Amino acid sequence: MSIAEKNFASAETATISTAQLTGRKSTGAVPRGLTFAAVIIILIMLVVILGNIVIHGAGTISWEFLSSPPEHGMVAGGIFPAIFGTTALVILMTIAVIPLGVFTAVYLQEYTDPASRLTRFIRLAINNLAGVPSIVFGLFGLGFFIGFVGGNIDSVILDSTRPVWGKPAIIWASLTLALLTVPVVIVSTEEALKAIPRELKDASLALGATRLQTIFRILLPQALPGIFTGAILAVSRGAGEVAPVMFTGAAYYLPQLPTKFTDQFMELGYHVFVMTTQSPDVDATAPILYGTVLVLLLLTFLLNFVAIVIRSRIRTRRANV
Amino acid sequence: MSDHETANMSEIPSRFTTGSVEPVDKTQPRVTKITVRNLDFFYDKHQALHDVSMDMFPNRVMALIGPSGCGKSTFLRTLNRMNDTIPHTRLTGSVTLDGQDIYSKSKDVSLLRTRVGMVFQRSNPFPKSIFDNVAYGLRVNGIKDMGVITAAVEGTLKQAFLWDEVKDKLQKSAYLLSGGQQQRLCIARALAVRPEVLLMDEPASALDPLSTAKIEELIGELKKMYTIIIVTHNMQQAARISDDTAFFYEGQLIEDGPTKQLFTKPEKKRTEDYITGRFG
Image 1: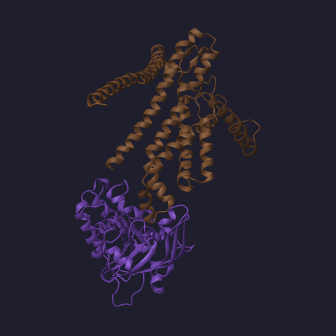
Image 2: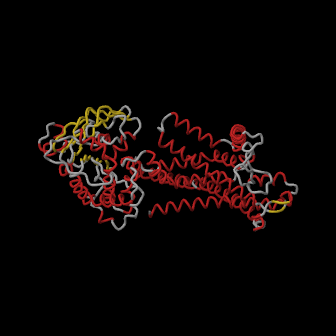
C-alpha cells in the first residue's frame, strides 16, 4: 500500500465517521422532544384544571359564601362549617402526627441499629403503611377508633349506654388522617436527622449530656426544618382526603360548628363529594361546587404557606442566631 | 489516692461553680491520673487495640503518635467512653481514672465525660451563639444560675485566649468565627465543665500555622491545671508540646516514655524508624 493509498483510506474513514456523528446528533433531538412534550402535557393539564376551577368558581366566592352555612339542600348558602371543619381537622391531625412521626424517626435513628432485623421490619411496615389505600384507613378508623377505642371508653370508663365517644367524631377523623400521613413525617424527620453531622452529637455527649438531652437540645432543633417539611407534606396529603373521614367523623350536613372532640363536622372534600353525587338540583349546585373546590385548593395552599413561612423563619433565625 | 477519689466524688456539684483546679504540688510522689491495663478493643470482629497498658500522669501532656489507622484515636476515645456510641464495639481490660474503673456498671458515663473532656479534630461548635456554646455543658449538667454561667463563660473564654476576640459578640453565631477561633471555642466549651483530663484528637490538624501556634501555646498553659492527652500526626508538634509520648503501631503500644527520651534514644527499632521518617 502506498502512502497515497493510505491517505485516501484514512480520509474515507474520516468522512464516514463524521457522517455517523452527524446522524447521532440528529437522533438526540428525539428524546429531548419527547421529554419536553411530557412536560408540556403536564403543564397544560395543570392549567386546564386550575383554570377551569378558577373561572367557574371565582364568581361564587364572596364573603357571604365563605361565612354562612349551606341552605336549601345545598343549592344555596355558603360553606363556612366545611371550611372551619377542615381547618380544625387538619390542625388536630398535625398535633397528633408530628409527635408520633418524630418520635418514631428518633427511635429508628437514635435508638436502634439501622442494620438490625427489627429496624428493617419497622421500615418495611412504614413503607407499606404509605401504600395502603385511603379507604382502608377509613374502615380501619371506623373499626379501631370508633368501634374499639371509643366503644370501650363508653362501656368501660363512662359506663354509658348512649354512645359518646363510640361514634363518628372529629377526634377520630383526625387520628385516622394522622395514621395516613405519619409515614411522610417519619421519612422527612429521618432524613433531617441523618443530615446532622456526627460531630455535633459527639460534642454534646462529650460534654456530659445524656442521649435524651442531646436529642432535645441538639438533634431536634437541628431537624426542625425537616420536621416542618414533613408537616407540610402531611397537611397537603391530609387536607384533601375524603375516604378516611367519611366514616369516621365528617357529616353530610351540619350547620353547627364542632365544639368538642366528640362532635361531627363538615369537611370540604366530603362536601364536594356529597354535592356531586347527592344534589337534588345539579345545575343549581354547580357554581357552589366549583366555589367549594376552589376554596379547598386555596385552604390547602394557605396551610402549606403558613408552614413554609414558619420553616423559613426558623432557618433565617438559625443563620444569624 | 483514696482521699483524692473521695474528694472528687463529693465535690462534683460544686466543682462546676467555684474556684479553680489547683495545680498539683510537684513535691508529692507521682500518682497516675489514668491507668490502662491489658486493653483490647474490637470493632465487630476487627481488633483495633491489642493488650495496651499505659499510665498517664496529672499536669503532663501525653502525645499519642503513630501512622494512620494505628489505633491512637480509638485509644483516646476509650478514655471517655466515646466508643460506646459506636454499635458493635467491644472492650476488655481496664481503664481507671483516679483508681476507679470507668467501665464498671455503676459508673455514670455522663459524669465521666464531664471529668474527661474532649476536643475533636474538626472544630464542631453547635449552631448556637458563642455564649450558648460555652454554656451548653453547664446547662446539661443542671446549672441554671445565670450568674454562675456568665462567670464561667467569661472565665473559660479567657482561659482559651479567645475572650478579647469575642467579648463584644457573645450572642453572635459561633459559625461566624474563623476555623482557629472555632477550635479555641470548642476548647473553652470543654473547659467550662471543669474537666480534670482533656483529650484532644488532632486539634490543630485542620488549622493554619498561626492558629496552630496559638493552640499549642494554649496547651502549654492548660497543662498547669489539667492532664492532657493529645493525638497528633505531627512529630514536631509532639516533640514541642508533650512531656510524654506513646508510639502506636498496628493497634499495639510499641513504646511510651518521656518525650525527650523517646525522640532521642528510642528503645525499639520501629519507634526509631517512625520518628526518623523511615516509614509511616
